Amino acid sequence: MSQVTWRAEEELVRRVQLAAKQQGKSMNEYVTQVLDAATNPELAGDEAARVRERLRTSGLLWEGGSPRARPDPEAVAAARAAAGRGTPVSSLVAEERE
Image (cartoon, rainbow, N blue to C red; front, side, top):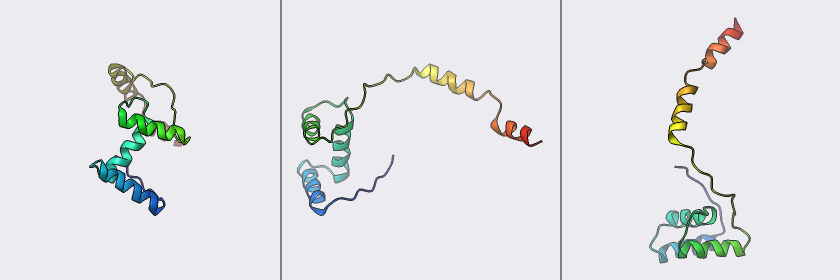
């Protein structure tokens, strides 16, 4: 999990804190949900829809491309196994240095 530092005007921070409190959420949880609603087209639901509409109206909604299918887990495992069988880079570098 990553951590982000955010700078904003005091009035905006106050409004975000108030909105989070009204929903019984921490500010971190509220901001995370707002950002997820703004960038995740898979989210559905009344609250997410309202947030997305507000962001769309203000020109801040990120309309990403179509969702992509995750690769087959067996194909990923096979690719990892095959990648581990090659010549180590350290060997190639050592050969070049000789």
